[in-house]
Length: 215
Image (cartoon, rainbow, N blue to C red; front, side, top):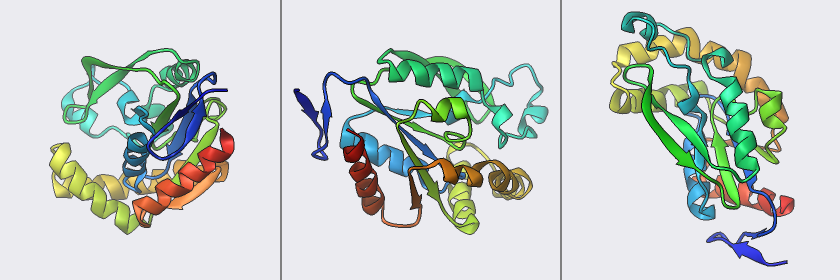
């Protein structure tokens, strides 16, 4: 059987359907950094579940800003399941693009198709059983709350137009408590649990070893 070799040395059978790698964990624990590193190593697309927040355009901006984005219901579960299923079948999807400065979906879409691998990354990647069942490789990335808060402050102020005060208040009122309730328990479903404060090279190497075992 002919195999496709990636920069990491990983070889994936060309006759197989795309291998989906799921990465979950609390906000700013290191999921995106790991997903980006793996995507570069494996020449694979990343599907960020942050793009699947429900569109709040029908609400006044003040109400959108107070919305709880840290519960599973804040995301479009049905569309996530459908898109992950289609990716695993080798089909192209039109992933939504979310505008975090206005809390609405953009009119743009991002076309994604997995050749042999794809990375699905987000808070609730391992929360829904229907999504977990479509992910042959399941990774959980954790980090101390103080580390997550420091990283979130830097990201949200720079990229999402937030004030430091609003970021701290959101973290205290919804981000941290909802992570304890919904996200931290999903580590039990992971094939591999990693620390988001260890060197990214070590985390990526551990995931690559696991993928080799599954291919």
